[in-house]
Amino acid sequence: MTTYMAKPDEVDKNWYVVDAKDKTLGRMASRIATVLRGKHKPEYTPHVDTGDFVIVVNADKIKLTGNKWDQKVHYKHSRYPGGLKTMTYGELKEKNPEEIVRHAVKGMVPTNTLGEKMMKKLKIYAGPDHPHQAQQPEKLEV
Image (cartoon, rainbow, N blue to C red; front, side, top):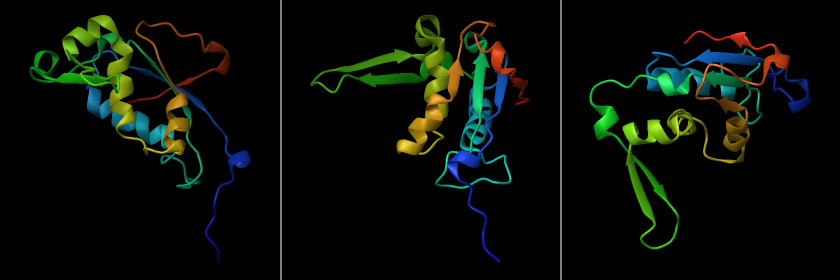
């Protein structure tokens, strides 16, 4: 008996929508990373992108516990000497709330070209609307 290995052209990709309103960031990000990797499917194969597309709406209404809005710091570097920029998550929420979710999920997917493919399947929007109605996304409970 041989182990089943999925092939890239055999994988069916579904679309899911997640409402981030009043959801805790880490718990939601781990569930999204699981769906992006395809670990929720029985035909999961580690070296093949078997995951689904995920749409996150209401990213500006996400919840962080404790004083993380004021104490947790987001770092960004331009790769030039002295190019480190720091910003608290409260400031980042006002400027670019999608980056908070993207940064959390990116830390939970592989750091290779397969992980880059998975991150391209993640669509994040600050408001309640998204332009992917034609794909008929299903609601994903987190």
